[in-house]
Length: 44
Image 1 (cartoon, rainbow, N blue to C red):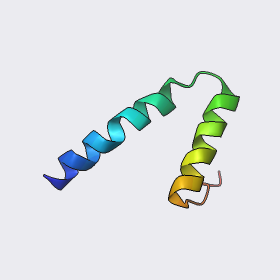
Image 2: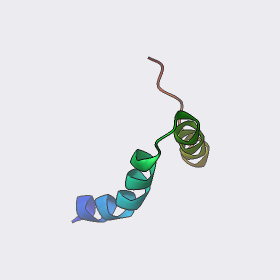
Image 3: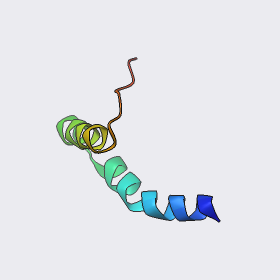
Image 4: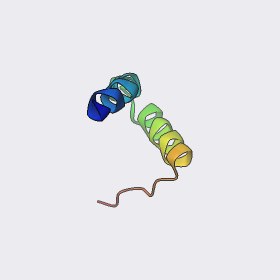
């Protein structure tokens, strides 16, 4: 049940992030998510 709720909450943001075609838009979106959720970037 909890997993279903989390998946529903995260579905639209995930789809929006994946739909970003150009690199600059995707990086802006990722930066926003990192700021909102206080995440550290993954280093490749």
